Length: 85
Image (cartoon, rainbow, N blue to C red; front, side):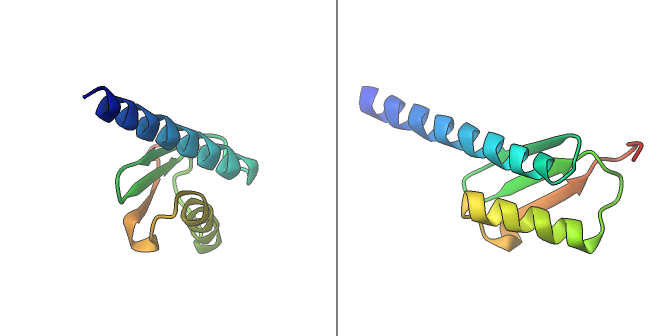
């Protein structure tokens, strides 16, 4: 039981590190605020912008795929509603 708990803790820590790295890489591309949530096979990315142009979506998708190993169809990019660009 202890080994299982340690394995889960390691998985959570690794996931949080990946989320932070992805957030920082996206921020480095000019986004003011980003939240990344990684699940087993899925990733959700929330950006502080009301609309995204296709180039921005492609850039975010590329970063998330590269850093998380998730497939494009399992990555959801969500513009934040009600933001002031």
